[in-house]
Length: 539
Image 1 (cartoon, rainbow, N blue to C red):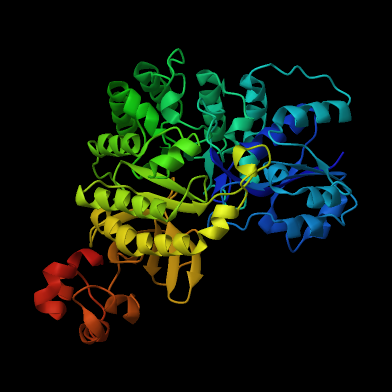
Image 2 (tube, rainbow, N blue to C red):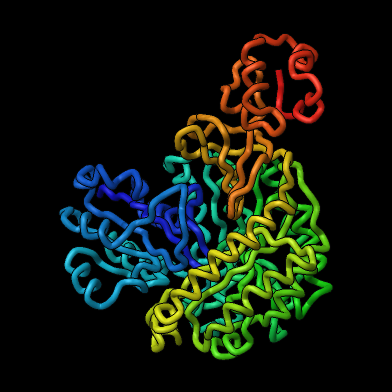
């Protein structure tokens, strides 16, 4: 049987699979099919939009889709309902999996069910059972989360089929579910809380490493600090000794990893267990790579909203966690702080009023006044899912507070984000290993392969996947402008003009006096400002 996996990308509270990320799902599914002695093909939705009829040659198509936590994406364009309707005309048998099953309404579901077998989220066990019947082969399915371990290993090789390979970040699952599972809007409630064996996680990372992967994020869990924690407490108590051994094992098996980051951190864990959390932060700074961000769910700084939506952490808990992580802030070899917190706001929740937006802004203003650094402020409107407590309220507050949301977001971007970037990345800071992704005119947009990387507009025209070092020269609201280290013998005039303290006249003089045999030669032409600009040049 000819089978293809079409990765339409996912973005969930605890899982990201939009390029350059590859989520665990295509790897698990690829492994399942390999187990049933099928060698599937793998494509991304971006590859197949204009080539959909190539899929006619396959007997079975498995589509992965679902953006539960919407964002703006540079690396790929996630699969939409329109895409699903376009693929519906294909004659092949089609299976649809992922959080998309929670997003579509009853009307759309009925239409899609005429063309697709929809396997409801969470889908992994159900898909395995479906494939077992289809291929008429029994498979043992363990009762806990470790049932996916063998498929994670079998599916590791699929990463080589990703169009961005080897520049892919593999999202690694340590556990599923949430010990809190009470937040009114979150789909993590649909998962059972199940840990994966640490040995199995390390084996998966090692298998991916052997297949050429060098970029990893321990992201597919709701709170990294509580992986293998002591769950006898109401708020699980972190286990620093385990965490140290776990990280040591990763590096022992995979010594040339380029990126090792995490994703989610529950601030309540840090507030309830500060001593253990302090030790784990130190382990993260020591054993993971710089540019790391722990995304924390503040959701709202309004205590009333916290109560009415059963949010886990209070604004005080979040502030405490931010302070504790800031105790360890230091700059790493790639130009970024080693580890910083990030915070998420969700707009449109129960109990929200105009005053909520004022409290949210004041919380952020307090961070600046106390010189506390956060790397990322994510502001999004709530997305309503069937089976969550927010289903009854729906989008009423989102619609009612649309104006407040817009004003709040614009104010944060203008007054908070830009100033935070100035503090984290001062002018002249050198950022290394920037991967060029998109060219727009004379600017090439690049990012480091990292968790929540900073978008860098590099002055110059560079091909995709060019790797550059560059120095910060200016700030946008959520991005920076940077100049690559330039050779004055071939730098473009507009690049030279962008160097602080150079200007049009001196840039023209530099071009007119080419070539330069060494820096002393350049110094004679530049004159008095040489000491200020020399770090932008390399001959």
